[in-house]
Length: 174
Image (tube, rainbow, N blue to C red):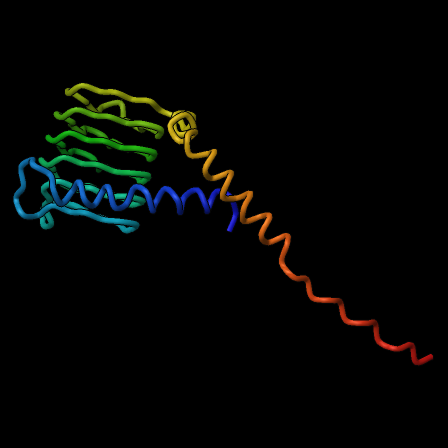
């Protein structure tokens, strides 16, 4: 596993329990159709409405009007054309795509990701956007020291393992 894979695994282990715990103990409005996901795809449309959505390492596809809050950690959110989002939205480390004639009435916080907004899309609530992955490096930099120490220990242990002797070359028969 490379360094990026190790970092993603560490972040998943740290963020997933907190995300799921926060979603289960939220004090906001709930209509019994809240969605909590990890590593999957959530599709919301008129036949599958949703309350609040909390997802880590997911893709959220909204194909209908949505009135609940939306939280996405390291996942993409795509809102199709001509739909309305009434609740607040938080996207951390992912992409938010707003289609034509999309209306966002709630507040938006996007950190360490990308906002892809069609020219006819409208965000009427407050908006805080820190686009780009450089913000993620600033936020995750305190984790680099423990990750570096763990990598160093693993590297030193692997280097000290017993090495099997090489087989002798076959005898020369000529």
